[in-house]
Length: 127
Image 1 (cartoon, rainbow, N blue to C red):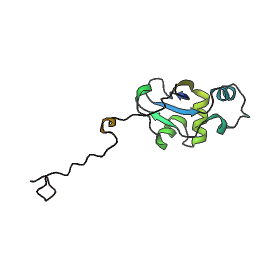
Image 2: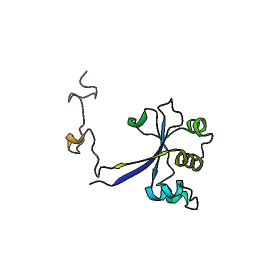
Image 3: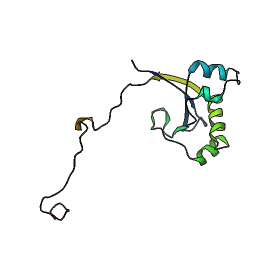
């Protein structure tokens, strides 16, 4: 069985598909922090200060938001301030993480395929 991934998800605008996420180190520590124990350092709450964003809802591909997106939705682009707002206003979600990753090229058995074109020379496919 895979390990657990805990994240806090925040939707800045209810009418938008934009979602922001922060990965949490430990769900119990996060719950204590959110419950009012602000003596717990943020470095103990979050896995990192990386902020993930998708404009396609929960099924979208996660990327990193621009400074302008952060300014528009949080009033700042400073990672500590944005992470704090996401932790305070967001909802916790947990799920299993696969131990291995696959790609669409697994059938190639980790070999490189080179298309060299025609053997007649010129490097333009024999044209």
